[in-house]
Image (cartoon, rainbow over all chains, first blue to last red; front, side, top):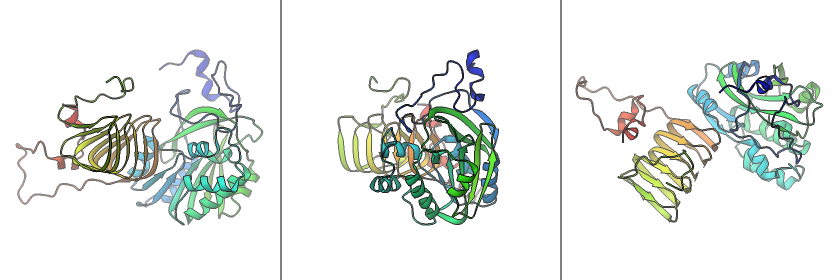
Length: 234
Length: 156
């Protein structure tokens, strides 16, 4: 479908700076007021992804691995990963976050609720996974919840395996663009804009390194959406 | 028909298939030798090994499900084995582990669990060369070949 002229440049607009006439959801109610859905925004764009290339590079030539996708199930991701011969686990992490903490994302430091959330979203045995597609979900977690989630991720992935996580490059925004990521190939992603959302925290390179300080290594790639793709070796 | 979401589901003329209406609740085991449409509640197990199981938009299933083909418009909480294919339609919800040969997930569907794609075993080479002039038409195991499995239903 052809977009009206004012919407054509929308996808290239800088994160957090909506284009003209864009029906942005300002999301004043909090971090999670706009849930990701299949809602159509600007036409999705396909772009190279060094992070994805690295992620699949590490598991290339293997089959029968167990991969966790925290972005919810999409046809492309399911097909791509299962076609490689891997078993896929799917968690709609942000939806569970919304259901556990409400639209405002409040009380994310409550230990009982953190435990409940972990049971809903990441209740897996130790060393269950050979890789995790984390995407951009970590920015919507308060420090206490984020710490718990990172510890749990470290627990459920095997040593020497990899996580792929995305972070916005600009760490001074009140609202950030959210995306749906669909795998097009071992080094190509289809990126669809979703709604604007209020992050709980944003990260610079140093804070990302600190976040994954207990992991083996962290590697960054900057993308055209001003996202950092981060490959973390466990 | 009026209870169906607009343009979402055509029951494909459910003549010849069994149905659990939306005001019906069943607890126990269902074994069916014909296609089954569930728009009510089922708790237990559902087996339709050679047939198609459709969970309608009002259907709520808490059961282990085994069928040749499964289409979900409502919700399933339980493990699903679909020897041919599984479709999770928009707004449907499936929480459980899946084993299937093929899976279709529409945007807006909710799925939580694991997916095992089980490639059908290739048909065993017969001791004698098969007769291509007389292919078996109705065998469910024809789904083992990479032929679109919905073909038979689509022709109804």
